[in-house]
Image (cartoon, rainbow, N blue to C red):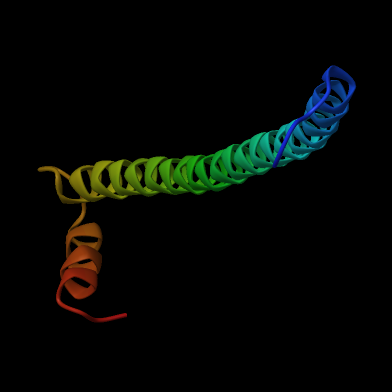
Length: 102
């Protein structure tokens, strides 16, 4: 760069710079591709966590449904056992259960 450069020298220098820039461009493209792959990996992991939470939520929902059904059955049985005209044994059984007995 110092002094007088011939056209051939300029061309050679520009070609060398172009070569360096092409190498840098290739490196940058690889970095972008790796960053995109890492980004997709993160998205997939987030989805796995979300789906796992949904699966746990579905299991909890199923358990809550079963609990509600059992409660409804117990309440229905309780109401039948203590209804007027029923023998006193059913009423006493629920009194024992409700008061903490066996």
